[in-house]
Each structure stands twice: as structure tokens, then as C-alpha cells.
Amino acid sequence: MVAIPEFQPGQRVRVCEEGGDPDTQPDKSVLGKEGTIWHGTGSEESGLTIHYFVELDDEQIEIISPDWLEPS
Image 1 (cartoon, rainbow, N blue to C red):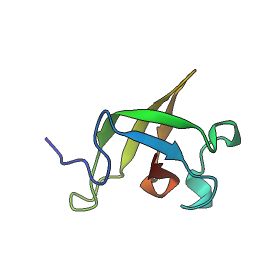
Image 2: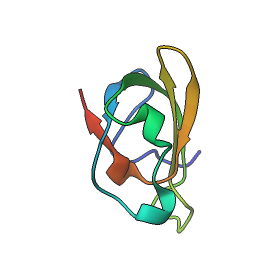
Image 3: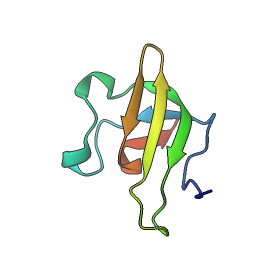
Image 4: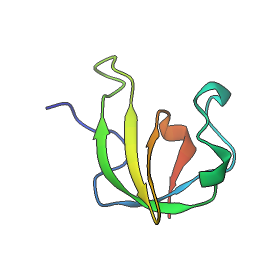
């Protein structure tokens, strides 16, 4: 199993309004919303792309860059 960096399942996070690579920016409709990490995969050490799956109040989204999340 690959270690999940920075955020863990069940952790509350907020989708940042600024930060990260513009090419991986989440849809503007979710910026500023809070949600819960339900899955993460990849790590910088393994060379795999880090993805976080976040459950917001009304939808589930995939965040490709951890720079777009912050603890809430």
C-alpha cells in the first residue's frame, strides 16, 4: 500500500481558492467549499501522481494537486 501524504481519510479539508498548478485547478463551483477526504492515492516518493478524492456536501470530486487543499 502506498502512503498517502499530507491528508488522511476522514480529515476535513477546504478547497483553496488559490494555489496549485492552474492546469489541475478544480472546477470553480467547488472553490471555498469544505469536505471530507475519503480516499487518497500516490506519493511524491513513489513518483505517482497524488490524487485526493473529497466528498463535499453535495458531490464527490477528485483533486489532483494537494496544493488545492488545506485543513479546515
